[in-house]
Length: 385
Picture 1: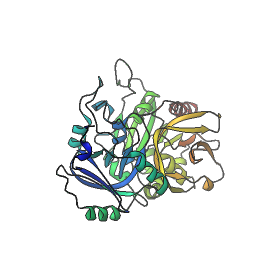
Picture 2: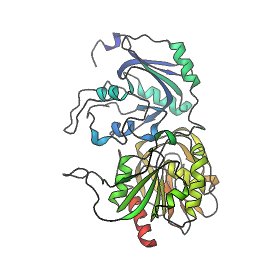
Picture 3: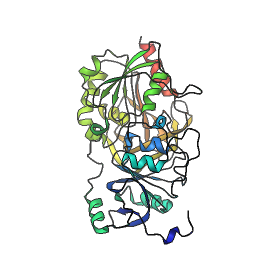
Picture 4: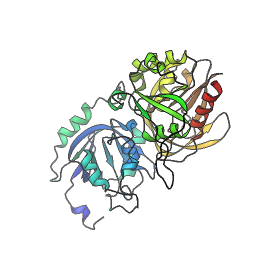
């Protein structure tokens, strides 16, 4: 940071609905946007985070200060374009230093229409989010530094929030497609599945590419269907198993159309595996309820205990709603729990190959402790055959 940076006129500001204003230096696109503000504690993977559809309707505060130092590249996009509304960082992004980098983060954000702000006290901001809950904010970037703060406060206050909001329809695929690309591996990068495998229908509530790659690597021939797919459309593919993907928004809102589909699919006695929003959708279909969290879980370092094995795995998480454990009906057991706050992180249906977890087991970004879940899904389909 230049020595005289503190004397420069701010070119960006983050305005909270309560009137609090953070001034900083803008990068990426210009203009303004409104969203819910969350924080993410991951030390790597900012590109995957910004392109994770689960971040629709949110501005992400990165607690790790060095964001942008590895640049960006097309291979690390989790979907075609960034989905998070914007990013907040401590230090301004620097020139990238990484052999895989093809573009600077600032240029990538500008080309993709996303706003960034640097020079923010992210520790103070994170404490405020933890203590007061995820606030509604307006993020603005103007190279001339001209801001109408009162108007931005009003925009932040007018943001409806994520409760009651169905965002899966906004990020899902427009039509069905096949997926055969597998996980990245040295030295060939991404390779294609060529052997026949289990026929899996993946319902796309906001699926990340690496989740689909993990399914392919676990021996699945994947057909992706939109979030609004009916049970008849799912079962018409004669699948060996059904996968319920991650996604954004209020699960109760998405459940208006997804829960009836899942209930009918469960009657077919197929293996079912859900993650993140898919986990919440499955819980709702089984009779449980979901609730909004104070500030959610966002990061790649969340410890989760597996009740079945007693093991602790470090996981990637991105969710602002959670399954209310107290509402789990008879025959549905809690399999995983967060060691941060005791919230639910997994369920399973007794005596059926139906299970789900709250976190993102594909580890993009994050540790690979949870990849076994894809193998468990594959083994369940093997057993059924």
